[in-house]
Image 1: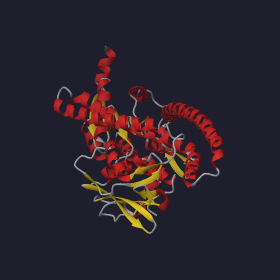
Image 2: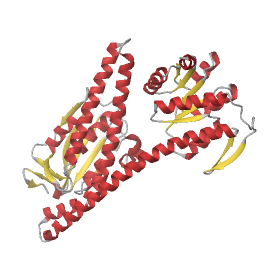
Image 3: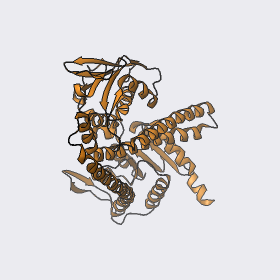
Image 4: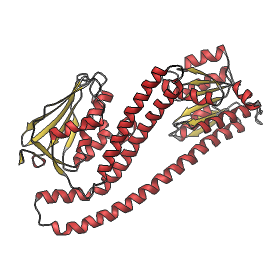
Length: 439
């Protein structure tokens, strides 16, 4: 009981520009008995600290204007007695040095774990009561990774900061080892499957062009399955994070704002439908390696792809003629749904998305066009790269990989400000109309 009264008296200032993340942190901390105040940026945070000093400040690192490191430096300059905990993704060891140089007392790594938040707050509050054996320091110049950092913290603060980051590193390493074990198991299964397929294909040397395309698809099965395992896990984790956020907000608002709470529940329901579609799609994909590329009607593929996305008020126009078939991996349906989702997510002003077909010599081009903001020239190729996709979504990277299996290429040729335009160039041998090759 005494511990609860003591904790209730503690005030926490949370500095976070994302309203959703800020409310989740508020709910998490208030559940622990802390008195929580929110600030949307560094300027507002300094104003609130000046009006009433909190016991602890939790600040996000990546914020517009004044970032978390600069805010920490200013707090330590004007209010050195207030502990500051940085909330970060902690992708780079240099982040730790920047935190020490700014005077941070500890780190909390996203996604935030309630137990870790509680332990770090309690640790910095306990440390605040213990004078550092080194006293105040003029600062130590530390060169690291091409930069020099001035660290004025004493031994105790440095040790606490490093211990908090080490705890996170151990947890992440355990997760990585588990993922590697799963990948090794998958690779063993794929190796056996490829060996079986290779033995089966020895008798196909004299077969026609269609059988040769099957051989190439089977040879690519190993790489493709590894790719799908990575992509599906990434998509599901993002969807589950969004689902958890909506449900947490609904839980917080169910008493005082039931209408808003139900809206969040409805949003969560939409996420559940997307997760269901993703899982159904993954189940179909398990057949890859035993199933070769197929002739599939383009117009039907575009129509079916709508079920994987929520169109809202955006209209989808499908002007591809009936009877036109493309020879492609069964996953080409995912390509069309990813193009639609990409337009909805990044088009900003999109009101319509159109699929059409045009002829270029012996080849045909499947077009996906929208009336949104388009793609800047320096992003037209980057959007298809794996590194870029890790930050914005891996759909376009996956699309290029799927299409390349049967020699189809994809590029973005739209005019910035007038909409995006994706062109899928299909060689003559992989597209036909009414059962006949168009080329």
